[in-house]
Image 1 (cartoon, rainbow over the protein chains, first blue to last red):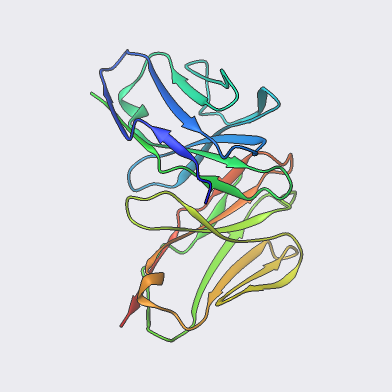
Image 2: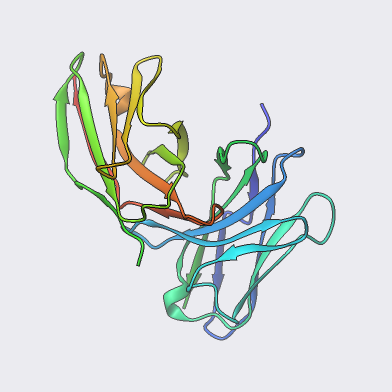
Length: 113
Length: 111
């Protein structure tokens, strides 16, 4: 069964460093998403991406964040200068485009020290 | 600020009983409504989605939507211990591609 994959599973970085989180969406999906979930809190929408451009973004997704689909398979989230409060689980999701049914990857746990 | 509200629980039901989970949302423009299950330390897993007022059944799960009351619910019949998880309600924005999640309701099914 196709699934969304994410790497790495856990990333530890120092405050101020840049991180890139990687996702491989389901191959025939058209819409891609990033979410974050701070420990013990709700899942928060960051950004949606379609046709090689951002479709929507939340207030969380400020200038420190960027997304890219550098090739036909990967979808990345870059945080330019990490802050302590960026520590969270980051989930990638993809959707086929007909029904908003999103399939989530296993997540990357980002720890900023 | 768009809000999705859920009773955080915990909700405990005996095995075989019906579990009822509720959710309200603030954005009247929302058109799509979702229930996800999240086991501890895992990613959300889509259980059901519903777009139209009324009931939608899928196996042991029934989603109910009342747009006038801005209310969505999930019923789990014949609850099993494996149903023990946090259930997340999610709705989309009136623009379509932004999604809001509730804080989730923790369900425990007691054998």
